[in-house]
Image (cartoon, rainbow over all chains, first blue to last red; front, side, top):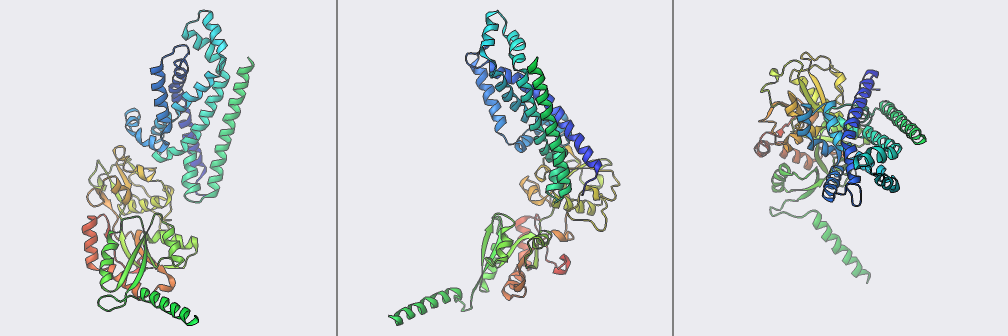
Amino acid sequence: MLVNSEQIISALIETIQMVTFSLLFSTILGLPLGILLVVTRKGHLLQNLPVFNVLNGIINIFRSVPFIILLVAMIPVTRLIVGTSIGTAAAVVPLVFYAGPYIARLIENSLLEVDPGVIEAAEAMGATPWQIISKFLIPEALSSLVLALTIATIGLVGASAMAGAVGGGGIGDLAITYGYQRFDTVTMMITVGILIVIVQGLQSFGNIAAKKIRRR
Amino acid sequence: MKKLLLSIIIIALAIIGAGCAEKTSEGKESTTVKLGVSGTDTRIWDFVAKKAEIEGINIEIVSFSDYVAPNTALAEGEIDVNAFQTVAYFDVFIKEHKLDLVPIATTVLAPMGIYSEKYKDVKDIPDGAKIALPNDASNQGRALLLLQEAGLIELPKDFDPNGDLTQIKKNPKNIEFVPVVPAQTPRALPDVAASVINNGIAGDAGLSPLEDAIFAESETATPYLNIIAVQAKDKDNKTYKRIAELYQSEDTAEFIEKEYKGNMIPTFVPLSNIGW
């Protein structure tokens, strides 16, 4: 094996940092976008087709761009926010722009599954749109939203493997640079094993949380 | 009927035979040599082919789009000669694929360079500075050797050319090395003290090893010299040797220097220098 346990631990920390921060910021970006995508569509609470069409288009554009290209295209923005285009912190910016629109779509899907009857009932009670969103729509979809964010988190674990491209490090990068490029099978097995444990853990956590919410 | 068939076969054979050994205007026999290259830039070989034609050697250039097929095609006899790879790549490739190929001459070096937007000299790079370098195994090893030549680090004697950063023995300036994908090295320039950039990528990014690099490889970077390779049984083939001589001549060197403005360095050294 070409790497030592210290390298693996620091790579693990880098992955956790990248995934945590990019999940936080991409949720902050994706949640309002997802809600807007639902409520501005035709026949919904705050129908506003121009807003819906523009958002829909922008999200599709970001979702079309291959991650490595997004990473390069975002360099000026990254430099503006983080001050450099290389390193773990710099990798978070493109990850946010990659996962944000993805989360918006997942949230849109979850919210669309809410029974329209619930919204109609709320409207009949005279609730304002904001009240309907915060008191009815989101609580109704909460369990499904948790599962959606679980999917997004696991997607970010995968995408963070590409962060090595800008010197971001991480477990996935270790798997690529040692396991794949240097034919170091042991490192490949260990790193992929760690990734499997992470993904299994995240999915189980998401499932349990979603189940608890649903039971309430 | 039988006689007719026989005469047709004889005529056909005669035509095919004539095709194989056409007479040139000077009356000398001409032979065709199939030469495999990678990519579409055949400027040097076009130049050499012109010179060879005068001597009755017709070089037919076959362009491949990857770095595997030119070697396998050579081993299978589909081409006669190839010229597209560094000796480091060649050595690993023939070992892994168990091919019976040999180099017959060295050609050019596409120098890797250290580039900087902030410093004019490697010596000016301050303590604790960041240097970006390629993250793939072969380029990283090459970059480390270059950094050693530039006096920034020291590597062990038994350095593995596919080695990684942990092999650095001494790093007196405590430089922080940031491995990034090769195509990212020019883009990282504003964020680092210097970047180690491959020749091809530097060219694509509009940089020139001659004018922009603050330090570049010279012909001492023997593992990265490019070679002409043939099947082992053709090692002493006179035609192939003559082609190598035509390549390794002064006018070819001048042509390369002029055409590539120093971004390709003609390096004609004995095979023993590259471990053959």
